[in-house]
Image (cartoon, rainbow over all chains, first blue to last red; front, side):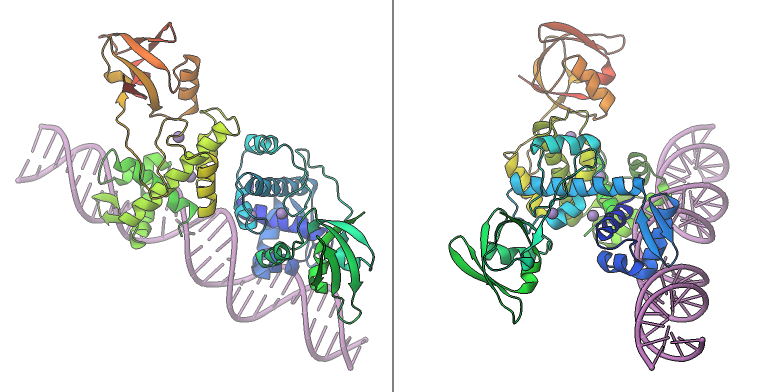
Length: 217
Length: 217
DNA sequence: ATAAATTTTTAGATTTGTCTAAAGAATAGA
DNA sequence: TCTATTCTTTAGACAAATCTAAAAATTTAT
Ligand SMILES: [Mn+2]
Ligand SMILES: [Mn+2]
Ligand SMILES: [Mn+2]
Ligand SMILES: [Mn+2]
């Protein structure tokens, strides 16, 4: 059994592994809002527990055991987010912090029953895939909106930034999951994008476009 | 804000206050599965935070602030128990440990939405009353089954013991919430009770009878 | 290749919650 | 009332997770 803190480290190492492998001490420190020295202490401990492989000065990778633990926490996090939005009418920008706590509740029965109660959802309110009880999930082939050219059409199926301010901004522009969009123009000058959504012309910055994920169709 | 541990202490002090006031160090130690010395440390801290009144060697009482904090935890605990039973099909003997964790999730929005989702339940799966958002709840006038005489009739509306083994035992005898019972006889010898429930004669020990709560009618 | 800058680790301290052992206070018995 | 028992508190220690400051390793730049 892992502590609340160990679980948070494992989950963050898991997410960072998708970007760079091995995962470096400072990258963890930045994400977890702590000091590099504290990270070194913790990764030593996780290494002793067989949850990560640690080579001094080189960074860490998850072991199989560490990976499945991390995926289970991600599973719980995303299931709780679905619960909050679908059943308790939370908005997609209100769920993250609460799910951050709920993901640590220890009960397999609870997770499986929750999954069933929610009718086995495949994605969370931000479009992120939910692992099944065996840890399997389809990696969706999503494209950043910022990669599209004028004339391209698609559907918003995810976001790669979960901050409340960002999500509220998208909400205001009707750029929410499931919406069909069509690129009108991409400005050479600053990369900002003009697009159609719900018969309306909208402009978004390149920075915003980078964090909107699209399936072309 | 209180820590997980502080919250557990407050809740236990709250429950023990109903039995004896002030609450003594050893009583807390026994309930919380810890040593008296640890309790002394913690009650000093809770006292400094203004959550309890502490007089050395005399025990503690909750302040208004401590009491309302404790009631809020009890509210969350019981709402989560209702959720687990009503929505996730947990049995009444399976909910306690999970609720013990869930009661510490920090989000007023979550509690209020959960209350609404559950349609503002008044009692939990063990018959215990659920405080409303202002901390008010009706103290039900329940009688221990062990106090009844032969010929007395009533309805099972609560239990004062939440262990899984006890609740499973009641389940087997059909002695669950809402069931009508009638006392046939109380044995002088050992206080054991013979009673009718669902057209069946059943025998229970005095010890079991003590923990079944009845409304006479 | 060597020096400078950056990253990572170690050393030592702090906070929270716990423990054991021993001392101090309250209560009960004779 | 005085002693024995029980209850409670203090003293000192420990594990978990964090921090600052300093040392060591790695990477980058000249
Ligand atoms: Mn978390
Ligand atoms: Mn999410
Ligand atoms: Mn608890
Ligand atoms: Mn209950």
